[in-house]
Amino acid sequence: MNGGTLLALAWRFAALSLIAVGGANALVPAIHAQAVDATHWLTPMAFTESIALAQAAPGPNLLLVPLVGWHVAGVGGAFVALLAFVIPSSILAVGGARFLLARSGERRVDALRWALRPVGGGLMLSSSVAVFASAARAWPVPHPWALPGLGAIAVATTLATWRWPVNPLAWIAIAAALGAVVPLR
Amino acid sequence: MPSAAEPSPVPSRGAMVREIGRLGLLGFGGVGPQSYHLFVQRTRWLSAEEFAELAGVGQALPGANTVNLVAICGDRWHGASGAVLAVAALVVPPTVIALVLAALIAPFAGAARLIAIECAIVASCAGLILATALRVFKTIVRRRFVAFAIGVVLAAAVLWRSADMPEATLVAVGIGFACESLARGRSA
Image 1 (cartoon, rainbow over the protein chains, first blue to last red):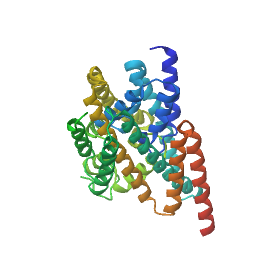
Image 2 (spheres, rainbow over the protein chains, first blue to last red):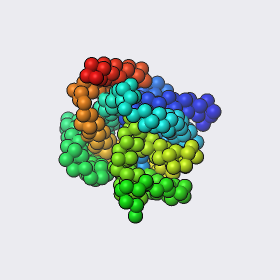
Image 3 (cartoon, helix red, strand yellow):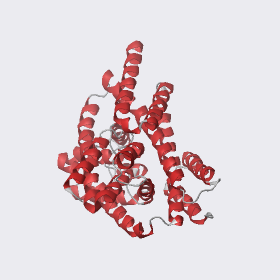
Image 4 (cartoon, each protein chain N blue to C red):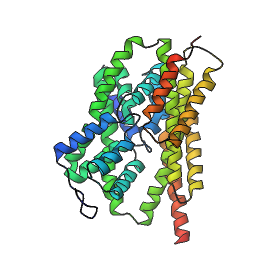
């Protein structure tokens, strides 16, 4: 770990934090582009592992961020990435809330609030595809049924979440159990 | 118990840190659904209307949704230091747990069975995120088709060139703002 790496981590995650419309889950393609493609901080496999762990551990969706930082520069890297990701967007949220709530009903303000929603939805759509691609690429043994199987898990989770709004951990646990028993050869 | 007409009580800093810390550790796959239960039903620190308004602003602005929500609440109750305490209470304990888990499974990294389990979890996450995205579009009442078109084009652009996501995001916000301003101007 060195100061330059920590500074690069802080800078990249601070910038990402300010475009994370739709939350941390909307950022997966951008984090992949930064941490895997541009800097080679993580292998694609380590990235997939981090997504799985971030989702399986308790807590907010942003756990992917400190896990990437941990792969780059250990515990210090994890907290640098976390703080860089949380501080700028929190300042913007507090300021933005004071501003937007005070001017609710003004045409421009309401138009901006409208415009931010499809952007969040669109970024989540792209994340969903990127997250799926990362699972498909990482599957350990080549098999003609691997891709359709993972696709079936994804579609079934979408439909189940839509139909029964229970704790999503239930669907994640079922998926993990399937991964634990499926034959690998 | 405060009635609906009375203003919501302001929690002490200690109670706020304790309850938000609990929230961070209870939630799996994101803590959004649990935050409604905590703020509105369990502690009654926010009315249902206040929650909808603050959570809506937190979701619209960039950053993790629940982090934004607790930052806004902390600021409302105890100013800037309240926002710092609330955010720290939410994110630090889960981060410590995730790092311990990462260190525990690190020796097994690369084992085929572990990778298979992780891939299945990640595929399931893709489905969860897709469902959340669809819910966002479902909650857009006015001009939903325009919103969906903007979202799909943005998603395609981000997947095509993910390094240019900041620019694509800003352009999409601008287009949405222009469309909505024009539509409102015409109907006004």
